[in-house]
Amino acid sequence: MRVLRRGDQGPAVTEVRATLAGLGLLPAAPPATPATYDAAVEHAVATFQQQRGLIVDGLVGPATYRALKDATYQLGARPLAYLVSSPVTGDDVLALQERLLELGYDAGRPNGLFGAQTEAALRTFQRDYGLTVDGICGAETVRGLRQLSPRARGGSPVLLREQERVRRAGPRLRGKRIVIDPGHGGQDAGVSVAGVNEADLVWDLARRLEGKMAATGMQALLSRGPHQCPSEADRAHFANDVGGDLFLSLHSDANRSSVAEGVASFHFGTATGNTSTIGETLAGFIQRELVVRTGLRDCRAHRKTWDTLRLTRCPAVRVEIGYLTNSDDRRRLSDPSFRDVVAEGILVAVKRLYLLGENDQPTGTFTFEDVLRHELAKAE
Image (cartoon, rainbow, N blue to C red; front, side, top):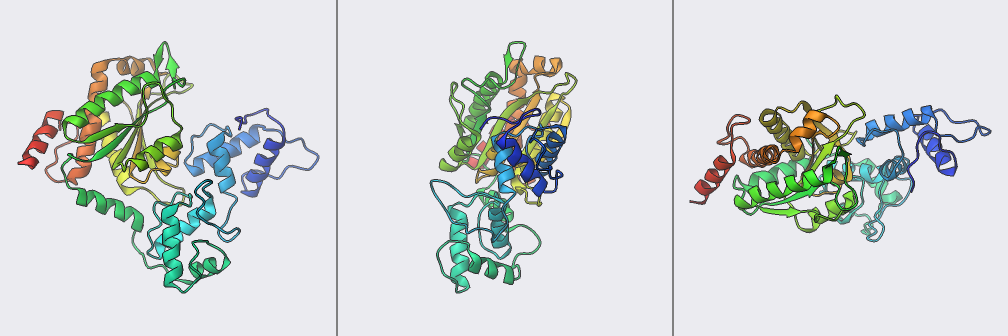
């Protein structure tokens, strides 16, 4: 679909306005009023994007349009099933996943996508409670889900399982499979300022990080080649297909103001409070390491629902390293030695994640050589 923006008119704008009105974000337009994408629509879209953890730009692109459609579905309004060729998405799927998790069934990450794991959890629930075991969430199953009291209290089971998997993985890095995702690529240069391209910078950074990880015994896999630009969904599916333990997406930022600067990290999290605990922890480690090591302004860690964070089955973090629209950030990012410092900081953050607080050192003091010595000591 084409991106909708202020000044646009037509059936697509009519649909967007009606959806926003149905969500209580926009007054319903009188029938005689032409459907125009005006300032009120732009503000309503930006508010919706903020609520949903999307990029807040006031534009309706594919991700925002999908989220608007998803927001119109409520559990019980339609039957839900696992369709391999055309996966079902929506807030009703999210409500189903959250309910199954509350009842103790492992439906996977609550991401609003009806996948194989959600179907398996639903079938188990149906079998346990004497319902028709068809993997379809229809009226009978919805009644059963609503009649039962939650078994799980004091935390989200799927997120606690993430923590347990990391604990069981142990402190050694050897054998862990890390997917490194350099943003953009191919014909998409990303942010481009004064001849400096985001895609080129993060590709070089990804290769440096790949080399350091390989030296520790980790299996580092790149989500794309130097001349490729997979979609966000394809990057997430790649991480799932190779069985990644962690997913690290590398980007640089831009802003209309040349004053904007700094580093920010992002992890999966929804408006309803579901957050990838391990993703949040890793984002925090990366954020603190990079701020201390580089001196970049701390723009903190945030929860988002971007596809690379939402669709990965493993903990995922996206790092926006500097603003290419800021002359100082751009100068520093253009320095290969600076990118080496960033790669070391990210590697150390991953090591801290698996150490779980044991034999750790103050932020910014753990070096690549320390990581190598720790790995050799664990091997003996």
